[in-house]
Image 1 (spheres, one colour):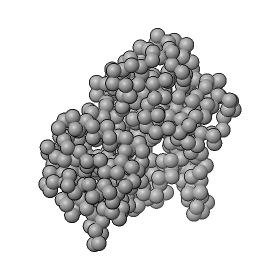
Image 2 (cartoon, helix red, strand yellow; image 1 turned 135 degrees about the vertical axis):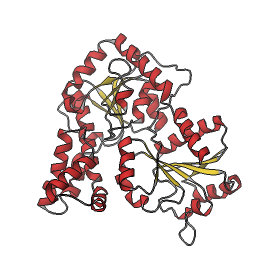
Image 3 (tube, one colour; image 1 turned 180 degrees about the vertical axis):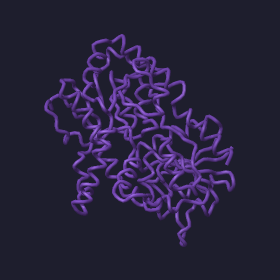
Image 4 (cartoon, helix red, strand yellow; image 1 turned 90 degrees about the vertical axis):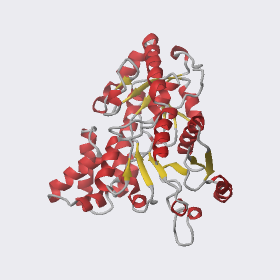
Length: 392
Protein backbone atom coordinates (compact mmCIF):
# COMPACT_ATOMS: atom_id res chain seq x y z
CA UNK A 1 0.00 0.00 0.00
CA UNK A 2 1.05 3.58 -0.61
CA UNK A 3 2.79 5.54 2.13
CA UNK A 4 0.79 8.70 2.85
CA UNK A 5 1.74 12.24 3.89
CA UNK A 6 -0.66 14.49 5.83
CA UNK A 7 -0.25 18.04 7.14
CA UNK A 8 -0.93 19.62 10.52
CA UNK A 9 0.28 22.87 12.04
CA UNK A 10 -1.51 25.47 9.92
CA UNK A 11 -5.33 25.68 9.83
CA UNK A 12 -6.40 23.81 12.96
CA UNK A 13 -9.65 22.36 11.60
CA UNK A 14 -8.00 21.06 8.45
CA UNK A 15 -5.20 19.54 10.50
CA UNK A 16 -7.82 17.81 12.62
CA UNK A 17 -9.55 16.45 9.51
CA UNK A 18 -6.17 15.20 8.29
CA UNK A 19 -5.53 13.36 11.54
CA UNK A 20 -8.95 11.67 11.36
CA UNK A 21 -8.27 10.47 7.80
CA UNK A 22 -4.71 9.45 8.70
CA UNK A 23 -5.96 7.31 11.59
CA UNK A 24 -8.49 5.60 9.33
CA UNK A 25 -5.84 5.03 6.67
CA UNK A 26 -3.57 3.38 9.24
CA UNK A 27 -6.40 1.04 10.16
CA UNK A 28 -6.71 0.11 6.47
CA UNK A 29 -2.99 -0.66 6.41
CA UNK A 30 -1.21 2.47 5.13
CA UNK A 31 1.92 3.89 6.70
CA UNK A 32 1.43 7.60 7.37
CA UNK A 33 3.70 10.57 7.98
CA UNK A 34 2.33 13.65 9.77
CA UNK A 35 4.18 16.69 8.48
CA UNK A 36 4.04 19.61 10.95
CA UNK A 37 3.92 22.87 9.00
CA UNK A 38 4.76 24.81 12.18
CA UNK A 39 8.11 22.97 12.26
CA UNK A 40 8.88 22.61 8.55
CA UNK A 41 12.62 22.02 8.54
CA UNK A 42 12.49 19.41 11.27
CA UNK A 43 9.59 17.67 9.58
CA UNK A 44 11.42 17.65 6.23
CA UNK A 45 14.42 15.99 7.85
CA UNK A 46 12.20 13.24 9.30
CA UNK A 47 10.27 12.87 6.04
CA UNK A 48 13.10 11.59 3.84
CA UNK A 49 13.69 8.33 5.76
CA UNK A 50 9.92 7.70 5.44
CA UNK A 51 9.73 8.50 1.71
CA UNK A 52 9.69 5.64 -0.80
CA UNK A 53 9.92 6.65 -4.47
CA UNK A 54 6.95 5.43 -6.49
CA UNK A 55 5.05 4.41 -3.37
CA UNK A 56 4.32 7.69 -1.55
CA UNK A 57 1.35 10.03 -1.99
CA UNK A 58 0.22 13.32 -0.45
CA UNK A 59 -3.30 13.94 0.88
CA UNK A 60 -3.79 17.58 1.82
CA UNK A 61 -6.43 20.27 2.31
CA UNK A 62 -6.67 23.68 0.64
CA UNK A 63 -3.30 23.63 -1.13
CA UNK A 64 -1.18 23.14 1.99
CA UNK A 65 2.27 22.21 0.79
CA UNK A 66 1.76 23.72 -2.66
CA UNK A 67 1.04 27.38 -2.01
CA UNK A 68 4.57 28.72 -2.41
CA UNK A 69 6.11 27.57 0.89
CA UNK A 70 9.86 28.00 0.44
CA UNK A 71 10.70 24.77 2.23
CA UNK A 72 8.88 22.81 -0.51
CA UNK A 73 10.73 24.53 -3.38
CA UNK A 74 14.23 23.95 -4.69
CA UNK A 75 16.52 26.67 -6.03
CA UNK A 76 14.78 26.48 -9.42
CA UNK A 77 11.31 26.85 -7.91
CA UNK A 78 10.42 23.18 -8.46
CA UNK A 79 7.99 21.77 -5.91
CA UNK A 80 9.25 18.86 -3.85
CA UNK A 81 6.27 16.77 -4.97
CA UNK A 82 7.35 17.14 -8.60
CA UNK A 83 11.01 16.52 -7.85
CA UNK A 84 10.13 13.30 -5.98
CA UNK A 85 7.26 12.27 -8.32
CA UNK A 86 4.75 12.28 -5.46
CA UNK A 87 1.08 12.48 -6.55
CA UNK A 88 -1.05 14.92 -4.58
CA UNK A 89 -4.73 14.59 -3.65
CA UNK A 90 -5.92 18.02 -2.57
CA UNK A 91 -9.29 18.25 -0.78
CA UNK A 92 -10.54 21.81 -1.25
CA UNK A 93 -13.06 22.86 1.39
CA UNK A 94 -13.92 26.22 -0.20
CA UNK A 95 -15.21 27.29 -3.58
CA UNK A 96 -12.49 27.05 -6.28
CA UNK A 97 -12.94 30.77 -7.02
CA UNK A 98 -10.78 31.43 -3.94
CA UNK A 99 -7.84 29.51 -5.41
CA UNK A 100 -7.38 30.47 -9.06
CA UNK A 101 -3.83 31.67 -8.32
CA UNK A 102 -2.90 28.24 -6.96
CA UNK A 103 -4.79 26.31 -9.62
CA UNK A 104 -2.67 27.97 -12.30
CA UNK A 105 0.51 26.30 -10.94
CA UNK A 106 -0.37 22.95 -9.40
CA UNK A 107 2.09 20.02 -9.27
CA UNK A 108 2.23 17.70 -12.27
CA UNK A 109 0.37 14.74 -10.74
CA UNK A 110 -2.31 16.80 -9.02
CA UNK A 111 -5.84 15.61 -8.21
CA UNK A 112 -8.45 18.21 -7.21
CA UNK A 113 -11.10 16.87 -4.85
CA UNK A 114 -14.24 18.97 -4.27
CA UNK A 115 -16.62 18.83 -1.32
CA UNK A 116 -19.53 20.15 -3.39
CA UNK A 117 -20.76 18.86 -6.76
CA UNK A 118 -21.22 22.40 -8.07
CA UNK A 119 -17.59 23.13 -7.18
CA UNK A 120 -16.72 20.02 -9.18
CA UNK A 121 -18.71 21.33 -12.16
CA UNK A 122 -16.94 24.68 -11.85
CA UNK A 123 -13.57 22.90 -12.04
CA UNK A 124 -14.63 20.93 -15.12
CA UNK A 125 -15.75 24.15 -16.77
CA UNK A 126 -12.88 26.52 -15.97
CA UNK A 127 -9.98 24.13 -15.28
CA UNK A 128 -10.61 21.15 -17.59
CA UNK A 129 -6.88 20.38 -17.75
CA UNK A 130 -6.81 19.43 -14.05
CA UNK A 131 -7.67 15.91 -12.83
CA UNK A 132 -10.97 16.42 -11.07
CA UNK A 133 -12.73 14.24 -8.51
CA UNK A 134 -14.07 12.22 -6.97
CA UNK A 135 -16.64 14.32 -5.12
CA UNK A 136 -15.92 13.91 -1.40
CA UNK A 137 -18.26 15.69 1.03
CA UNK A 138 -17.02 16.69 4.45
CA UNK A 139 -17.65 14.22 7.28
CA UNK A 140 -18.02 14.16 11.03
CA UNK A 141 -16.18 12.92 14.11
CA UNK A 142 -17.71 11.08 17.04
CA UNK A 143 -15.98 12.31 20.20
CA UNK A 144 -16.91 9.34 22.36
CA UNK A 145 -16.49 6.01 20.55
CA UNK A 146 -18.93 4.20 22.83
CA UNK A 147 -21.61 6.85 22.18
CA UNK A 148 -21.72 7.87 25.82
CA UNK A 149 -23.85 10.90 24.98
CA UNK A 150 -26.06 12.69 27.49
CA UNK A 151 -29.76 12.32 26.52
CA UNK A 152 -30.95 15.44 24.71
CA UNK A 153 -33.41 16.43 27.45
CA UNK A 154 -30.63 16.80 30.04
CA UNK A 155 -28.12 18.71 27.96
CA UNK A 156 -26.71 22.05 29.10
CA UNK A 157 -27.31 24.21 26.00
CA UNK A 158 -30.67 24.62 24.28
CA UNK A 159 -29.17 26.04 21.06
CA UNK A 160 -25.54 26.41 20.00
CA UNK A 161 -23.82 27.81 16.94
CA UNK A 162 -20.23 26.64 16.43
CA UNK A 163 -18.46 28.93 13.97
CA UNK A 164 -17.22 32.47 13.44
CA UNK A 165 -19.12 35.58 12.39
CA UNK A 166 -18.07 38.56 10.29
CA UNK A 167 -20.17 41.68 9.72
CA UNK A 168 -21.17 41.78 6.03
CA UNK A 169 -20.30 45.50 5.94
CA UNK A 170 -16.66 44.41 6.27
CA UNK A 171 -16.75 43.55 2.57
CA UNK A 172 -18.23 46.86 1.40
CA UNK A 173 -14.75 48.23 0.70
CA UNK A 174 -14.50 45.68 -2.13
CA UNK A 175 -18.00 46.43 -3.39
CA UNK A 176 -17.44 50.19 -3.58
CA UNK A 177 -13.76 50.24 -4.54
CA UNK A 178 -14.17 51.24 -8.21
CA UNK A 179 -17.12 53.52 -8.96
CA UNK A 180 -20.89 53.87 -8.57
CA UNK A 181 -21.63 51.75 -11.64
CA UNK A 182 -19.60 48.80 -10.32
CA UNK A 183 -21.08 49.27 -6.86
CA UNK A 184 -24.60 49.00 -8.25
CA UNK A 185 -23.57 45.96 -10.29
CA UNK A 186 -22.14 44.13 -7.26
CA UNK A 187 -25.11 44.99 -5.06
CA UNK A 188 -27.38 43.74 -7.82
CA UNK A 189 -25.71 40.33 -7.59
CA UNK A 190 -25.89 40.35 -3.79
CA UNK A 191 -29.58 41.24 -3.85
CA UNK A 192 -30.23 38.42 -6.33
CA UNK A 193 -28.49 35.88 -4.08
CA UNK A 194 -30.26 37.11 -0.96
CA UNK A 195 -33.63 36.84 -2.70
CA UNK A 196 -32.82 33.52 -4.40
CA UNK A 197 -30.52 31.63 -2.01
CA UNK A 198 -30.61 28.39 -4.00
CA UNK A 199 -28.48 30.05 -6.72
CA UNK A 200 -24.68 29.87 -6.81
CA UNK A 201 -22.42 32.90 -7.09
CA UNK A 202 -21.23 31.76 -10.53
CA UNK A 203 -24.79 31.40 -11.83
CA UNK A 204 -25.73 34.88 -10.65
CA UNK A 205 -22.48 36.43 -11.88
CA UNK A 206 -22.91 35.02 -15.39
CA UNK A 207 -26.55 36.11 -15.59
CA UNK A 208 -25.78 39.67 -14.50
CA UNK A 209 -22.74 39.98 -16.75
CA UNK A 210 -24.70 38.78 -19.78
CA UNK A 211 -27.52 41.18 -18.95
CA UNK A 212 -25.00 44.03 -18.94
CA UNK A 213 -22.61 42.96 -21.71
CA UNK A 214 -24.23 40.21 -23.74
CA UNK A 215 -22.34 36.97 -24.26
CA UNK A 216 -19.14 36.84 -22.18
CA UNK A 217 -16.15 34.73 -23.34
CA UNK A 218 -15.23 31.89 -20.97
CA UNK A 219 -11.75 33.22 -20.25
CA UNK A 220 -13.18 36.62 -19.27
CA UNK A 221 -15.83 35.01 -17.09
CA UNK A 222 -13.11 32.95 -15.41
CA UNK A 223 -11.17 36.11 -14.56
CA UNK A 224 -14.27 37.77 -13.14
CA UNK A 225 -15.10 34.79 -10.94
CA UNK A 226 -11.73 34.98 -9.18
CA UNK A 227 -12.56 38.55 -8.17
CA UNK A 228 -15.97 37.83 -6.61
CA UNK A 229 -15.05 36.02 -3.41
CA UNK A 230 -16.25 38.99 -1.36
CA UNK A 231 -19.78 38.43 -2.66
CA UNK A 232 -19.72 34.82 -1.46
CA UNK A 233 -18.54 35.99 1.98
CA UNK A 234 -21.03 38.85 2.16
CA UNK A 235 -23.98 36.59 1.47
CA UNK A 236 -22.92 33.64 3.67
CA UNK A 237 -22.36 35.90 6.72
CA UNK A 238 -25.62 37.74 6.11
CA UNK A 239 -27.55 34.49 6.43
CA UNK A 240 -25.42 33.18 9.31
CA UNK A 241 -26.09 36.36 11.27
CA UNK A 242 -29.77 36.35 10.35
CA UNK A 243 -30.29 32.80 11.62
CA UNK A 244 -28.89 33.68 15.04
CA UNK A 245 -30.77 36.99 15.14
CA UNK A 246 -34.11 35.30 14.46
CA UNK A 247 -33.68 32.98 17.42
CA UNK A 248 -32.16 35.52 19.80
CA UNK A 249 -34.77 38.19 19.09
CA UNK A 250 -37.54 35.64 19.69
CA UNK A 251 -36.27 35.13 23.23
CA UNK A 252 -34.23 31.96 22.64
CA UNK A 253 -30.77 31.83 24.16
CA UNK A 254 -28.16 30.93 21.55
CA UNK A 255 -24.65 30.01 22.72
CA UNK A 256 -22.15 31.00 20.05
CA UNK A 257 -18.65 29.51 20.06
CA UNK A 258 -16.44 31.45 17.68
CA UNK A 259 -14.97 34.85 16.88
CA UNK A 260 -16.79 38.02 15.85
CA UNK A 261 -20.20 37.47 17.45
CA UNK A 262 -19.94 40.56 19.64
CA UNK A 263 -20.45 42.54 16.40
CA UNK A 264 -23.86 40.98 15.63
CA UNK A 265 -26.62 43.49 16.34
CA UNK A 266 -29.72 41.97 17.98
CA UNK A 267 -32.79 43.58 19.50
CA UNK A 268 -32.68 41.09 22.37
CA UNK A 269 -28.91 40.95 22.77
CA UNK A 270 -29.20 39.49 26.28
CA UNK A 271 -30.08 36.18 24.61
CA UNK A 272 -26.86 36.08 22.57
CA UNK A 273 -24.52 34.10 24.80
CA UNK A 274 -21.01 34.81 23.51
CA UNK A 275 -18.60 32.06 24.52
CA UNK A 276 -14.95 31.33 23.76
CA UNK A 277 -13.63 30.33 20.37
CA UNK A 278 -12.65 26.65 20.49
CA UNK A 279 -10.53 24.16 18.64
CA UNK A 280 -12.05 21.13 16.92
CA UNK A 281 -12.14 18.92 20.01
CA UNK A 282 -13.55 21.77 22.08
CA UNK A 283 -16.36 22.24 19.56
CA UNK A 284 -17.17 18.52 19.64
CA UNK A 285 -17.36 18.64 23.44
CA UNK A 286 -19.89 21.46 23.25
CA UNK A 287 -21.95 19.53 20.70
CA UNK A 288 -22.11 16.70 23.24
CA UNK A 289 -23.81 19.18 25.59
CA UNK A 290 -26.17 20.66 22.97
CA UNK A 291 -29.85 20.04 22.32
CA UNK A 292 -30.16 21.93 19.00
CA UNK A 293 -27.05 22.56 16.91
CA UNK A 294 -27.67 25.41 14.47
CA UNK A 295 -26.03 25.16 11.07
CA UNK A 296 -26.14 27.61 8.16
CA UNK A 297 -24.56 26.16 5.04
CA UNK A 298 -21.61 28.29 3.77
CA UNK A 299 -23.11 28.52 0.27
CA UNK A 300 -22.47 24.86 -0.54
CA UNK A 301 -25.48 24.22 -2.76
CA UNK A 302 -24.66 20.58 -3.57
CA UNK A 303 -22.47 19.45 -0.69
CA UNK A 304 -22.32 19.20 3.09
CA UNK A 305 -20.60 20.84 6.05
CA UNK A 306 -18.86 18.92 8.81
CA UNK A 307 -20.99 20.76 11.40
CA UNK A 308 -23.98 18.67 10.28
CA UNK A 309 -22.36 15.29 10.77
CA UNK A 310 -20.45 16.39 13.88
CA UNK A 311 -23.77 17.39 15.45
CA UNK A 312 -25.41 14.08 14.54
CA UNK A 313 -22.51 11.92 15.71
CA UNK A 314 -22.41 13.66 19.08
CA UNK A 315 -26.08 13.32 19.87
CA UNK A 316 -27.45 16.79 19.07
CA UNK A 317 -30.38 17.61 16.82
CA UNK A 318 -29.00 19.32 13.73
CA UNK A 319 -31.10 22.38 12.85
CA UNK A 320 -29.98 23.26 9.34
CA UNK A 321 -30.77 24.43 5.86
CA UNK A 322 -30.17 21.86 3.13
CA UNK A 323 -28.54 21.40 -0.28
CA UNK A 324 -29.11 19.20 -3.32
CA UNK A 325 -26.72 16.63 -1.88
CA UNK A 326 -28.20 16.80 1.62
CA UNK A 327 -31.75 16.47 0.24
CA UNK A 328 -30.90 12.81 -0.36
CA UNK A 329 -29.64 12.30 3.21
CA UNK A 330 -31.53 14.57 5.59
CA UNK A 331 -35.17 13.96 6.44
CA UNK A 332 -36.98 16.62 8.41
CA UNK A 333 -38.17 15.41 11.82
CA UNK A 334 -36.52 12.02 11.22
CA UNK A 335 -32.76 12.63 11.41
CA UNK A 336 -32.58 16.44 11.41
CA UNK A 337 -34.71 19.56 11.57
CA UNK A 338 -34.78 21.51 8.31
CA UNK A 339 -35.47 25.20 7.75
CA UNK A 340 -35.10 27.19 4.54
CA UNK A 341 -33.15 30.38 3.92
CA UNK A 342 -36.25 31.78 2.21
CA UNK A 343 -38.29 31.40 5.41
CA UNK A 344 -35.88 32.09 8.22
CA UNK A 345 -38.61 33.81 10.22
CA UNK A 346 -39.88 30.29 10.98
CA UNK A 347 -36.70 29.33 12.82
CA UNK A 348 -37.98 30.34 16.29
CA UNK A 349 -41.19 28.39 15.78
CA UNK A 350 -39.23 25.29 14.75
CA UNK A 351 -36.81 25.60 17.67
CA UNK A 352 -39.50 26.16 20.30
CA UNK A 353 -41.56 23.21 19.10
CA UNK A 354 -38.52 20.95 19.41
CA UNK A 355 -37.38 22.29 22.78
CA UNK A 356 -40.86 21.75 24.18
CA UNK A 357 -40.91 18.14 22.97
CA UNK A 358 -37.91 16.21 24.40
CA UNK A 359 -39.12 12.88 23.08
CA UNK A 360 -39.26 14.23 19.53
CA UNK A 361 -35.80 15.75 19.92
CA UNK A 362 -34.43 12.42 21.12
CA UNK A 363 -36.04 10.58 18.22
CA UNK A 364 -34.48 12.99 15.72
CA UNK A 365 -31.10 12.89 17.48
CA UNK A 366 -31.11 9.09 17.41
CA UNK A 367 -32.03 9.12 13.72
CA UNK A 368 -29.26 11.61 13.01
CA UNK A 369 -26.71 9.50 14.83
CA UNK A 370 -27.65 6.38 12.88
CA UNK A 371 -27.52 8.26 9.57
CA UNK A 372 -24.10 9.78 10.19
CA UNK A 373 -22.63 6.63 11.72
CA UNK A 374 -23.75 4.58 8.72
CA UNK A 375 -22.04 6.66 6.05
CA UNK A 376 -20.64 10.06 7.02
CA UNK A 377 -17.57 9.62 9.22
CA UNK A 378 -14.00 10.36 8.14
CA UNK A 379 -13.44 6.60 8.06
CA UNK A 380 -16.02 6.40 5.26
CA UNK A 381 -14.24 9.17 3.34
CA UNK A 382 -10.89 7.43 3.93
CA UNK A 383 -12.14 4.35 2.08
CA UNK A 384 -12.78 6.49 -1.00
CA UNK A 385 -9.33 8.05 -0.75
CA UNK A 386 -7.72 4.64 -0.23
CA UNK A 387 -9.17 3.37 -3.51
CA UNK A 388 -8.12 6.56 -5.26
CA UNK A 389 -4.47 6.59 -4.17
CA UNK A 390 -4.04 2.86 -4.72
CA UNK A 391 -5.41 3.18 -8.25
CA UNK A 392 -2.92 5.99 -8.79
